[in-house]
Amino acid sequence: MMPSDCSDSAGLSASVPGGVRAVTRCDVLGQAPFSEEPDRLFRPYLSAAYRATSTQIAAWMQAAGMQTRIDAAGNLIGRYEGLAPGAPALLIGSHIDSVRDAGRYDGMLGVLLGVELVAHYAAQGRRFPFALEVIGFGDEEGSRFPVSMLTSRAVAGLLREPPTDMQDAAGLSLQAALSGEGLALEQMPDAARRPDEILAYLEAHIEQGPVLEAENLAVGVVTAIAAQYRFRVHLQGVAGHAGTMPMTLRQDALAAAAEAILAIETIAQSGPPDLVATVGQLTVAPGVPNVVPGSVVFSIDVRAGEAAVRNAAAEEIRKALEALAARRKVTLDMSLQQDLPATPCDAALTDLLGEAARTVTGAEPRRMVSGAGHDAMVIAALAPVCMLFIRCEGGISHNPAEAVDPADVDQAFQVMTRFIEDFAGRRP
Image (tube, rainbow, N blue to C red):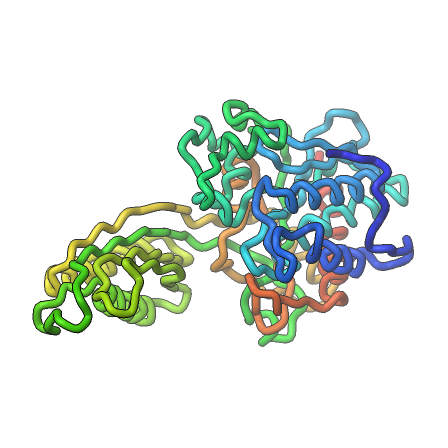
C-alpha cells in the first residue's frame, strides 16, 4: 500500500509554487483510478478508489521527505521529524473521502497543501522543534457508512468501542470493509493519539460558501464551527389506490412530508442568519404513480453557530411535525442520528493564523464561522485547532462545478508557512 517508487503523476517540476502544485494534484485525483465511478468523482472510505488515492498520496508524501503509515482506522499519515526524533507534532490535514458526484477540492486540498508544506521545508533542509505530520482522514463525509467523521473520532480518542453494527448500502459491514484492507474492527480505537503527541491541528479547506468571493478575499480565518443536529424522520400513513381513495379520507405520508418540509424551511428562515435547516434525503414507499404514499422517510440537518439556537430550532421543528402528524392522522418517528456541538477554534492559534494572513495579504483577515462540519471539530477534543478558509468559485461545493483559483491557494500556502514559522518561534 505504500510504494516508494510511485511517480509524480501530476508531472510537475520543483519550481512550481506549492499552492499551484496542490491544485494540480487535486485535479489528478479527481479522475480514474481515483474514483469509483467513471463519469464522476466518488471516493468512499475503504473503497478501491480510496486505496488507490491513499497509495498515490503516500508516494507524494515520501517524495516530500515523510515516513508514511496507515493507522488502525484507515487514515493516511505522513511524518516529517523535528529537530529531535519523536518530538510531538503539529498536525496538518483534512479528509480524502468524498461525497457522490463530488468536487475535486473539498478535503483533498487541505491534505495536499500539507504535503506541499513539508516538501517546502524538506527542500531547505529545515526542521522545527516539533514534527510536522500530515493526515488524510478516511471518513469525514459519511458517504459510505452512516456516521460522518468516523476516523477522526478514532484519532481523537472518542471511538472507545468499535461500531459493530455498521453496514453500507450494499449490506457490507464495516468489519468486512476494514478486513479487506488488512485492518481489524476491534483495533480501530487503537488509532487514538495521546494529547502529548499532538501540539495543535491546522486545517485548510475551501470555504464551501460565497462570503469570501463576495468580499473579494482569497482567504479567511475560521473562529468556530457550527453546531449540527441530524435527524431521521419517518412518517407512516396508509397506502391506498390513487383512483378510489377519496381526498378527505387519505392518510398521505408524502403530502404530510411536503408540509413538514415547508414548516422546517419557515422555522429556519425566521431565525438568526446563521441558522439553517435542510431536508436533503427523502424516500417514498411504495413509490409508484397509482398508489397514495403510505410511508416517507426523510432527513433533517439543523445547524447554527450556537448550540442554544440550534437546539431551540430543533425543538420548534419537532413540535410543528407532531402537530401536523396529528392533524393528518399519520404517525411520526423523529430520531436523532448525529449531534455535533459547536466548536470554537483555539483563540491563540486563530490569532496567530490571523497575523500570518495579515502579513501575507496586507489586509485585516476576514473572521468567519463555518456552517459546514469539519474534522477539526472532532480533533478539538485532542488538541487545540485552527482553520483557514480558501475562496471557491460561487461558493459551490459537493458538486463537480467546485473550483478554486490556484493563486488563492498559493496565498493560503504562504499563510500556512508563515503560521508554522511563527508557531515555531513562540514555542519554548
